[in-house]
Picture 1: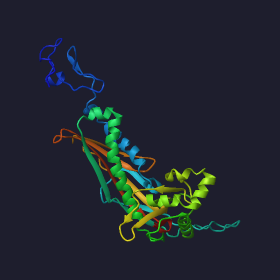
Picture 2: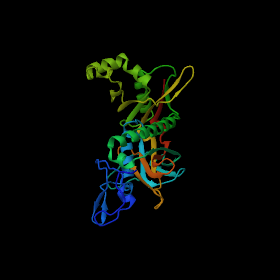
Picture 3: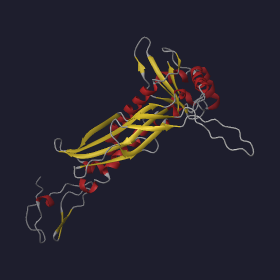
Picture 4: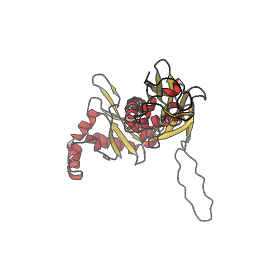
Length: 344
């Protein structure tokens, strides 16, 4: 685009067309800056920014994704940014249970023999990605709102897929309570607690995720209403998502992704679990080869264990930088006695 700067001599040197017509940067600079023998432009271009752009996009997406998931951060996590491939199988040892033995003076210790010791194989069979084009990558990278807007759309899509896969895996639980077609109430929560306790699932780190229709039913139960009136000043009636610890569960969570099978009646599969009843394993993906024109990074979220890879590469077809956010992971049931299907 002609900005009225003719080619020619500028203080002792001849600038090239590239040097003369640099893009404006985010600080409002709109023209070239010349010095004796050297052209200076105070603009961060893609080449200069390539080493930190991928991490910025991945971290922004992880921040948003973390707020959209309820099951993933509350299960056993095994994650690593090391590069793996789709279909790889992880071999994760499970110690089983160990019994205590009596010890008397002058006798040797009795070595414990684990019962139920096994190896859990988790297949990294879930690989999902979201790609989009950003035409002005430098301006977008410098504008946190733009990054957040792009990352939000990608993170929501990935979060829903990861959570859906988790609920689908958990729905295969062999232990269950409740009746399809009947909304949950406080008695069902107590029944779920009793069943898990009878199955010798340890107390603590127990969670339940229920559908939106069931949380409304639970909140409307007179037993919950009375409890809320005395212990929380009735606040639960205006914020169903803030039930917190109730009926022996550390948290009663709400998710619109709880599986529902259409029928007569509809079959809603709410899930109760202990943290070590399920595992979600994440691994990184290979970074782009050097010289390929693409840059990438694997970033792990310490709070949830989720690992995302972000890759940036110029796309000549669309005239912009293609940003890809992707995840490689796998779900597996670890212990049936620590998992419960709560039908409604």
